[in-house]
Image: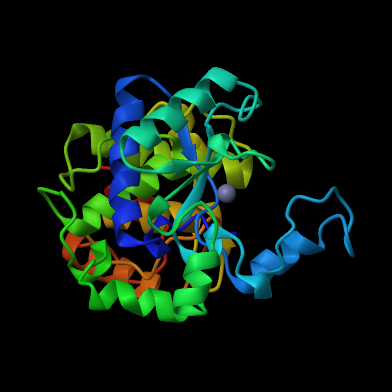
Length: 296
Ligand SMILES: [Zn+2]
């Protein structure tokens, strides 16, 4: 499902960077969960507890456009600590408060259906009624972002980034993927380099149960876990996600980041460009030589 921050309203993307920065200062281990949700994804959630097993988690079918997630103005968060994602009330209260101080609305303040994991842009109220009335559907709303010149990181908007927009987006993805907790300033410094190693360690854990500590230190255990693993076009793995993020952290544009990632033609092209620039064998396959170069 949609964890792609770059599909959200541009202003919300900016606020998420600020929120991540504030949380990092307070040692709050913030994980970003669901962001944008398509009609089909909302329908799948609506089916849960009705036509599919599980308990009911939403009262909004996709066609009703009643979820703020369908409008790109909301995201969910969690505590990025394995086994304790949702059991720390103080954590949700504090992150909710920080979110509000940055101008967001918090689902923890709702009466009735309280959602402590949910933060949103409150410009259109706490429900989607006004958006539905004004725009009808998400596509119309989305095009209003461009008209208003809101800009997005990928189309050359103006987020508060001093370095590269691509590196900036990669830093946000690194924070989401493995809780790297770095500030998304668009500059590839030592913290960003370390975050890149964490991304690769996380992917090796997810794909191969490598059991590495995600510490950003590339030791023999990490090297062994990477072994001769590779990913190439057509594959769907977390190692693909890692390749996408690592390339962005090196200022290479890729065609989006998914988790797990799907190795498409955009990524293949980026891998080839990178390999060529680095004097590696240009085969478009992300293998150990390419990964070792990417984290270096
Ligand atoms: Zn939500």
